Image (cartoon, rainbow, N blue to C red; front, side, top):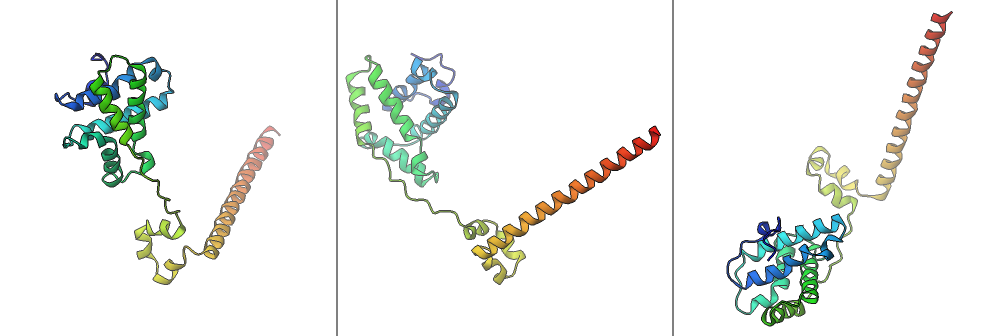
Length: 202
């Protein structure tokens, strides 16, 4: 079923294990009216999330009991190994696809349905830790060459509000000055051209 889907074979190669049953549950809803009614940007997000999941799913070895925790294990993998924020792991999309299929597909066997329900039930979303708010200091620290081009004292002052305020005023003043100068040059060139045209007419 769904062998004709152009994206199905790119997601996973069946290996004859429980993975195939789970993979089919996840992939099948993407060939349904429900999926095609989603916005294109949402469809791409789903396809991308499923592809990432399948790559991990089929290369990871699971113990007999750990298969019930695949959503949690994948979530931890994305956060700890891929440095993805807990809210952006794609697990919720995988979970939503499973739920969608379980609710709309009556042909799923009892054993597969039980397995999927246990996987969904055991899933626990990782808490979203408050990310550190970016500061000028952290921003400047991400520009390593800048530190070497300045002395330590000046570099340490970069993140201070007073320095920021003065830099902002100087930057805006410079931009306004340059705009004014260019407007003068344009006006002068325009006046010169008009005078030349007027002289030639006379």
